[in-house]
Image 1 (cartoon, rainbow, N blue to C red):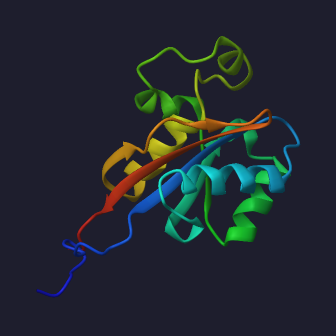
Image 2 (spheres, helix red, strand yellow; image 1 turned 180 degrees about the vertical axis):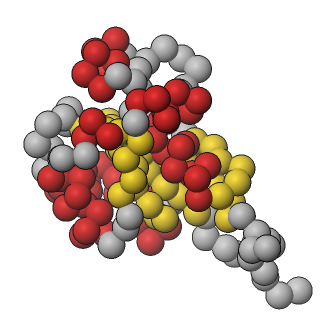
Length: 146
């Protein structure tokens, strides 16, 4: 049986997006190292990535834009309101909410982008973090071509 868009076959690479949160002026190198580490925990590489996302509050962060350019990936920003349906069940951070308007950033950004790009979106484990950034991964299935 030949793989098709709706049935890619057992060897198809998973489709993954990354939701990223970061402190102001977080360098691209820090974001890239965290992203590579996060992917490696699941046996994935940057070749598995279909996109990056963050909160609109970070739309002027050079490190995020540099990372997207470096990886040749689209960077999508979501408003705090757009992230509301994608928030994790456990309580987020009051500090993050006071700064961004959203109780969490990485997880809801990953889920929002995964749901925009396909179906069956789900977080891939827990988010990872460093002193400067957070990263959450979400998998999804490509929507069948009509």
